[in-house]
Image (tube, rainbow, N blue to C red):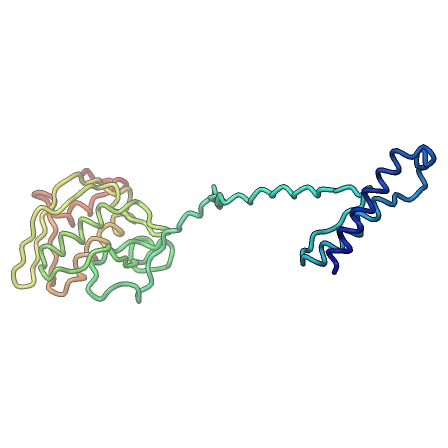
Length: 242
């Protein structure tokens, strides 16, 4: 039924359009005269849409289509990881002796000097034990060699601790042990201590480092063919010739 209406409306629109273009009496349609043909065409379009079930929009003759510009995709954020700047001023570790509970039971120790403590060695000084970083092997000759070489190779200072043996570059070449008497033979450069204070510190450090081993009852160190004890009895300000 609606299709019949559609056909009738379409024919009427065609007839009106033709009449408007051929009938001189109508003349030119004024701008405020409704466009009957367009109105009929629009009505026909709506009827057609309803009849066919389509959802096509019907536009008037004066309607304009405005296209909305698609949004330009925003640039994705950079995925380059940022690097944390490395501090230019890195803290410097302060060298300090380890507390006793941080020293292993089987550690090989060396002894250095804490000056000015009213202690029994040097000129009112004390000995402080340090771990050499080595552990005992169970062989006295090996362990004693490691201990004394570690002492002579240590620097002049370890934090606030002082090493009176530093100027010398002695090293162990042999060890003999018999019934508690241990002879240690050394070579290298022996440097005479500057004064009696340093001579006492030097002797105390060497003897304490050797006597840490229970097997060593009597320690006899040699520098080539001379006893180290005799060498230490002479120092630069003693007034004696070396």
